[in-house]
Length: 294
Ligand code: HH2
Image (cartoon, rainbow, N blue to C red; front, side):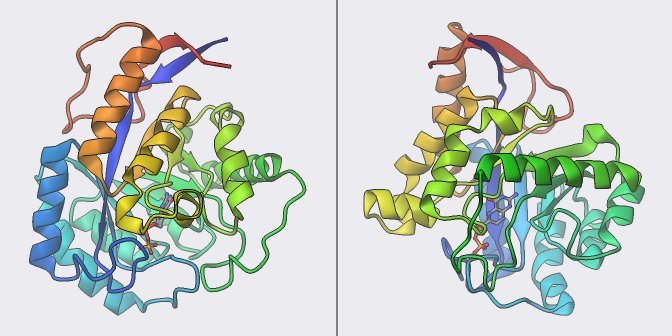
């Protein structure tokens, strides 16, 4: 079956947190986080996703003041670094400060449910917004999550959140969708979502995939978070083949190379990139037609 293969966009993760599951504490110092962001851009990140609150299972919420204290200096230090800046937050005040500091993407894991002011803020600022599926909230989401048909339910949720965003003045073209791998899902829920990702892609908006270093990869491979890059890449490449567009990863160099080679292979030919890391936009859907392996 011929499906369009999007040009992959790599979103590098900069967690300014003491407790992230994958890299907690490594980039808590603003200078270290800024240096890490520059390194990720040099490795090929077109977007940097900066977060000041861990959303790992069991994580406790962080106050607005603390989140601002963590992320604002890092955003300011990365403005002009050569990548778009994304703020990973569910708080409108944090998104507003991030936008003031140069962020043009709001990555909201609550899909605009966490703060009643978030939709208006995104609409006013004209930011792109990533709406992610999560069952429950981080503190409790991994306690026995259940679905009838996980893909159908996640798809319906994302469709409704897209409608909600548009009703609140956010342009459809600004919305990206994310199935929320690991957010209120068992290993089989994650795998089924990845196997049937094309059903989410069919909603017609850029799909973001965040599998990087997540625990289901550790369950399958027996490896610690920092050693899950090969597992991460396997999921990214298979997601690309189904039409996913944005790949949120910690290991940017490896993911970039794998995705570029996978995209060229799926297309059956190599085309020099049409966009650079500074101009990459998921609102222009540059696609190449390729055959999807059945
Ligand atoms: N995953 C995490 C955080 N933010 N955002 C989107 N859109 N999609 C994701 O899958 C996603 C996300 C969790 O990963 P990480 O940032 O490494 O960990 P932590 O939340 O513990 O900081």
